[in-house]
Length: 67
Image 1 (cartoon, rainbow, N blue to C red):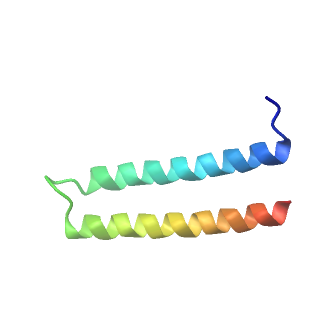
Image 2 (image 1 turned 135 degrees about the horizontal axis):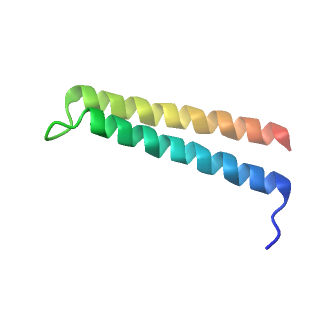
């Protein structure tokens, strides 16, 4: 299987972004876990999700301008 350089870069950037999201969610989950998700923890989870959407938007725009 031969993957072009541009396609490989797209894959790596996307996988790293998703991996960062998962890592941050794990950190938030471990910080705010006290027998259940607290109100502050829920806000942190929402903030991480909004940050992920913004990150992926930025990544998508950056990748679109690279081609």
